[in-house]
Amino acid sequence: MRQHRRSHMDSIMTTLSLMVSLFLFSGCASRSTTLPPPTPFTPVPVDFTHTWAKGSHPFTGGSVIDIDGDGTFEVFVGGGEGQRDALLSYRDGRLVNIEPGTGLSKDSTTYGSTAIDLDADGDTDLLVAREDGVYLYLNDKGTFQERRIPVDLPVDSVPFSIALADIDHDGDGDLYVSVFVNAKTFRSATFNDPTHAKANRLLLNNGDLIFTDITDSSGTASKQNTFLSVFVDLDADGWQDLVVSQNTGAVEIFRNMKDRTFQPITASSVFGFWMGLAIGDIDKDGDQDLLFTNVGTSIPLFLTTGDLRKDQRHTHDWMLLRNDGAFHFTDVTEAYGLSGEGFAWGAVFEDLNLDGQLDLLVAQNYIKWPVHKFLKLSGHTALQSTEPGMPVFRHTPALGLENPYFGQAPVILDLDGDGKQDLLWLNIDGPARAFLNTTRANYLTMTVPDTVAAIGTRITLETDKGKSETRAVIGTIGMLTDQTPELSFGLGDHGRVVRVVIQRPNGQTDVITDPPINRKIPLH
Image (cartoon, rainbow, N blue to C red; front, top):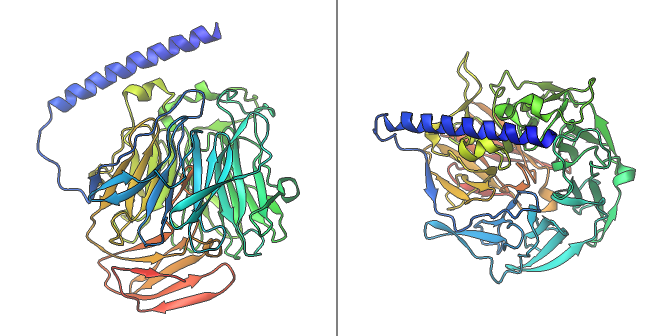
């Protein structure tokens, strides 16, 4: 009887969606055909379409990686079950797949990936979470050797993503594996069944790429199925803390106690479907703020109550937590104009128009929701505004970055080497889409080594008009993605940077005075 009611509801929603789609189509046909003004982003053809195979989760993953150390970035993109992974390189005006011969691909479904020089040999390696386990691909000048990393995963689970940081300051990279119940046993809106929740794993690097599981002793097992987790220094003490973005759970934040243990921090979070995680200093106070995406307004709340008890509450709203220092966070979702948004996956903060304000990119649409098969959201591309009385983040279609596909995550990188950060949309069961940034504004890009020692580095610019946001070197931002190791700062029409302040996790502070603008500056 319950299944019959669900099928009837799906039929009603599908019919409504078709009616709305026909209405919108007829309305568009009668509008003026005047061409829109030029946009600051130019589309680039991409030679990859992700295929989702039923029986696995409908996700992919992506990492920005310089495979041969030539200063030009490629993008590793995961394939579905039975589909080869891709390695995309910008050549002759398009992104072409150069994966054959690299040794990077497997037939197993690929989820999250992280690029890092894990063995400190000067080549950037790749960590990949697959349906059948966690793998390390050691890089030798563009050719990769596969090595499986033993992980004691819970029964009926799969690894989704891999966060990396030197949690104990011993010089090597430790791994936090986000774990999710497998697709065959997954049940939506399951909040209270402990057999359905799968604990994450923290692996301590012994220094020889052999890892010891310290999940229990560190206190980081987590309480629900996790899409992704991020190491980030939340209190500016040089030690990487941990943020866990969970499905059907409350957001978890752990403070690094500097002794290989973590202490849970109370966050103002109720139960939600926390999926994407964006991190950035949106208010320019020097610390990192946290945005979590959720189901949003696309699905009625009453359809997702699942096994919640009467004394439990859940939400579909996104959640923006302002970091006020000392592990105090304030929910500013509504104040920043981000309440009432639709279904969303991966999210990233980036200064899209190079005006000196962090903007927001969010992938949208759910492949299992019937409405989105016929009436898709456009993807949320929002510029940050400083105008009094206006929402801080405003959706801006004029950027030309609309993505009406089953989006999973934005990936930020400089494709053409001009110093401006471009965009790749990862899509589920659809084509990847790329855009070159042709914005005419001043900028300064800091190129950070993709090394363990660089993780947690904090950089702030000071111009003749004041300070920039503080950018931090963080992996696994978005959703199952690892973004560029470059940190780009928009300057707008400012013609001078007074100095660049670089704070390293080991406590060292470096200052670059009067750096040249509109170019890349490498850090060592």
